[in-house]
Amino acid sequence: MDRRKVILDVDTGSDDAVAIMTALLSPELEVLGICTVNGNRAVSFTTENTLRVKEFLNSSVPVYKGCAMPLVSSLQPGRRKHMPYTGPDNPEENVHSDYLDNMPPAKTAPERVNAVTFLIDTLMASDGDISLILVGPLTNLAVALRIEPAIAGKIKELIIMGGAYEFGNVEPFSEFNIWIDPEAAKIVLDCGAPVTLIPLDATHRACFSEQDCADLDAIGTKASIAAAEFARHRIKGYRQFQPMARPDWGPVHDVLAVAAAIDPTVLKDVRQLYVDVDFAGGRADGMTVIDVDGRDKKAKKNCMVAFNADREKLVAMVKAALARGEKA
Ligand code: RIB
Ligand code: CA
Image (cartoon, rainbow, N blue to C red; front, side, top):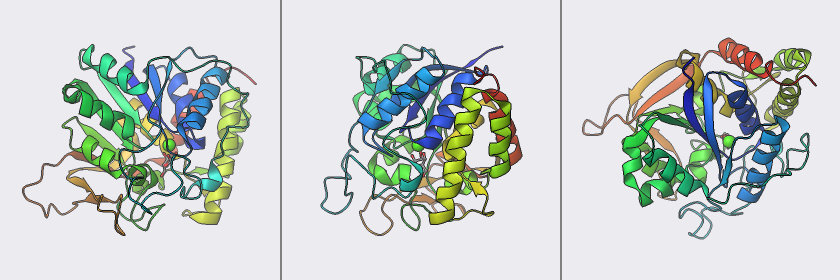
């Protein structure tokens, strides 16, 4: 089987952890490296957590520590408080913690090379056959693009969990990954590489249920049991701060991006549209401005945007991947 070459860019986090485990256990993907970034927590925590997931699966995938701060959004007084630690600002605060406490402390370290250098060197040396799956703020890739713009022509696809059309999570119309670093998102969405954007409109329609968690537990691998624990925690947290269509549902946002890299038909209602990013610092700061009606006739339609997803297909894909892991 031709495995798809991917690089993950994460801010691990509970849903990032499920995404990483699914990617590492999917035979369809060859994970060349995992880059970490400031987001759900400071990059020291997101790196430690990513190493914990890697070791939990006995994986040798290299981990590259990335940017500790957004490009500029934390410089303007009051625009982004609590940087680098984003706890109180993080709408998902009650579904993440500093450490993934269900996994042992990491014994390995990240690579000496930083994430930005890894991205540039790997992409420039490639045949243009590498896709990036980005499920945190887009700071690393934005910096890489500023240092070496030519990488845009070397990227097969950017699959990004981020943005929102109908509703946000950190602000009424802003989603956390974009909101943390709106300027980075603007640079990335306009870089010219093919973009598949997976906003909250899709991830909220592909939630995991309490029953899915029971099924994952029954699969009985270390990875499936850990994923059930993460998903249960998220179902409980979301009931409190952003109730889903059903009270026993919780979104595991990031894993949808991994599934889309394996089988794009897991995404539904996908449209080629122009997506802009507001970084004016006002009430819509960090909003993805999705031009659904094509109002801006001059704009280049820079993204394939997924407005829905196949929940059952996603859950089945995740169960199949995690079932390949080591028995608990
Ligand atoms: O808004 C959801 C996104 O923000 C997810 O990627 C979650 O992990 C956080 O990074
Ligand atoms: Ca994330």
